Image (tube, rainbow, N blue to C red):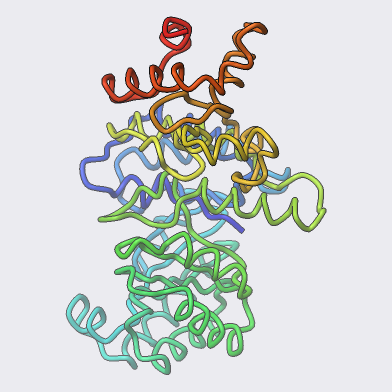
Length: 374
């Protein structure tokens, strides 16, 4: 269901250069977390043959419940044959579907593009690639009948999957649903979705695609990728875990706490930081300071949290500062084992001292600072 493209799409992000050690560790975490498919890179990527050899030896095999190992390559016979020689489980072939991409990149008409897809998919089958996925690039701006024509040719030639790529991130959840519906009605093989985040809707579009019947969606750690990136692995996996829990289906397929570790590693390898308010992976997504939120959390955490922090490997933090009420102060003092001070939350002068100091410091107070104003 989840195709992790951190090592392909994420590695293509501007200024990102994953070391060999980082790539291997990220792949190990993906496999342990239950990711269905790892897109290991693109044909021609430096160090790819060595990485594929390592992955085939060290990661659990597909038949043992491990992830499928896939590569991306352009729609060319020579590239398909070279990729097949690397021992892939799945091959993702990119095929421009909009007239602009076909004509400006390749100088091909629709008929010529269909002929090329037919020939290249046939070449992949002849090279004994076990699973062929054809990605329709820029499908969100393609004429619907032309994109469907390409998909039909690919399936007739032997493609096992059609991957729809919102290359420039212009879809919305509603238009994603319409796009998925048109292909699911016409195509007999699983449909995948690859959505970019240029307008900030990649995760929402990926979730919509799954809700509408997509068999797979592309994700990457922290949403790393070209330009604004793609759907975030940790966000989609957390949504799937939440849905599984709500449906009483037992444990989620994906180990979301492990994916937080992957996010930290990916951020370090990409020389970036995880924003503190980043959904699922951010340090502060279970932190609260304002009075109404803290009061509610103390009564029942589910009032203000969609899932428990432990479900994603996080911890809850309650801060005492200028926005806090008496409940936060009392709860913090109780945590600090000061029973005699537990009723101090209603002390107006104490609250004034707490808020004055927090405003002066520009942040919530530490435990020692709170005790110091008692």
